[in-house]
Image (cartoon, helix red, strand yellow):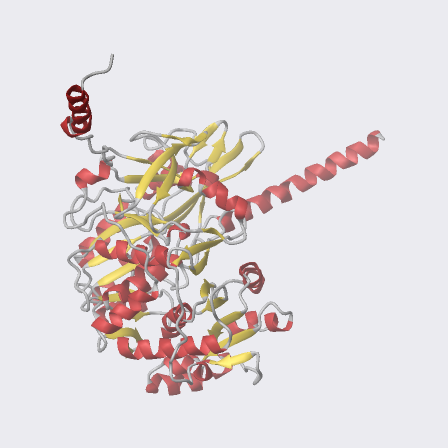
Amino acid sequence: MQLPFVDRFARAVRGLLAPLRRPPAPEPEVRRHPWEKVYPEGVEWRTTFPPKPLTALLDDAIAAYPGNPCVSFHGKRTTYAEVGDLVARAAKGFQALGVRKGIKVGLMLPNCPYALICFYAVLKAGGTVVNVNPLYAEREIERQIRDSGMCILVTLNMTALYAKVAGRLDDGALERIVVCSMSGILPFAKKALFAILRRRETATVPDDDRHVLYERLIDNDGAIDPVAVDPARDIAVLQYTGGTTGLPKGAMLTHANLNANAVQVGMWGPDTKPGEEKMLGVLPLFHSFGMTAVMNLCVRFGWELILLPHFKPIEVLRTIDREQPTIFIGVPTMFSALNTHRDLAKYDLSSLAYCICGGAPLPEGVQRTFETLTGCTLVEGYGLSETGPVCTVNPLHGVKKAGSAGLPLPGTVIEIVALDDPDRLLGLGEHGEICITGPQVMHGYGNRAQETMDAMRGGRLHTGDVGYLDDDGYLYIIDRIKELILAGGFNVYPRMVEEAIYLHSAVEEVTVCGVPDEHRGEIVKAFVKLRPGESITAAELRRFLKDKLAPFETPRQIEFRDTLPKTLIGKLSKKELIAEEMAKASAAEAPDEQMREHLSEQKS
């Protein structure tokens, strides 16, 4: 039976009003991370980073601080306005050579003003920078040139550098080499001295179309053809990994990746003063750590960058005493070398306010000693080439946990996944593979589709590092997955063994790795460098470690050395030592194999 019109109308009205009477849907629950409750005051973790071109850092600094010193090199200072003019003219010069989107330009330069100028000039021209380690052997450089697909390379007119790449013009790997004059960036007095004393080290460069002198590159009005950059997609830098496991791969870092990482690191020191600080730049700018945490961070805030071409402890001490920098970023071996330098007391290091250490574990004793000597704050951080590189840092103000790599930078999420199931997230305190999500995470590996898929499983960057998060969200790194030592069925993490050995006051440096053993598969071996004037035997060191390591972790072999191999940024390097041990093992097996062949022939 049909309802009367009035009843039908009332029911319709009630139906329309019903949603208005329902309670509002609850807001979706925001996932809280453990580090948020202890995050440093004045730093906001929940920050977003709109994609911006990396060159915006330089443009903003030039606009805000045109007369401020940008680069200081051997006492010669260049202002931000002057650098801006040089970058514009170099960019137009690169465009005249055909640089545009998709074109890769190699920079094979030590720390010098050319490194900063050409870096930003290539980006302004629309190209992609490929950082090339100038101390690599010619074979390694050739491989990187071919793998990256670069067609232009920039280097100095020093024979030691130019000779490594000149042949690539003849075999077609390169189209042009831009050659910068070392004397062109020195003060007048040093320029004259250099011309006299280093004449034999200067390369003779052919006068042909395949070679472009820097002076010719910048001989223009600086009117660049505008380039429309898509910050989230356009690759700013192809940064090759260190290659400690397998061949180096080129991490594709976008403009947005690198801009965000510079801003993230800058947020970590809210009380630093834009336009007023001085940064001591010893870390190589061709390395991701130096590129971002030194060069781009300085540009971000209009700071003065005091460049040194390489790390020599006495030169660093003299420069700090003379130039009075306020910030110094380095690796553990740098701070250790300064701590133990015999002339340390002669120099004033009190200008240093903040120092950040990365690249390798920072021994607590090194940290404590350096802070006592200088009065500055020294904190440890963590990162990798694939993340531009900085991911975590201990707070400059607040709780600094010894042995920890610190808290995630703003916008960065650290997660730990199971080693046997990369899709299973682990809880606080559980050991597994460190994974990273954030605005600084790379676009992928160049020409490595499968390796990109493996590294970016589940939308996270799988670092290959083993670690855990404590209850406050501080990250602790145990070791590299591929450096794990399998000794008699036990997992031994070299870093944990190294940390125990560092507790002995006589030890200055130590590297631990696994060496082949017929019975156990691998055994633990420690290579130890003692402090000057110290003496200890292998037996005494093992006794010291008895209550600090399990028996299977205690090194079965201990070798004392005067020096230990290092990478070009000063990190202790294992691969040379592992190669030595593998060669010894092969040599030892050869006589046994010959004997087996002899016995086999006799039986025949």
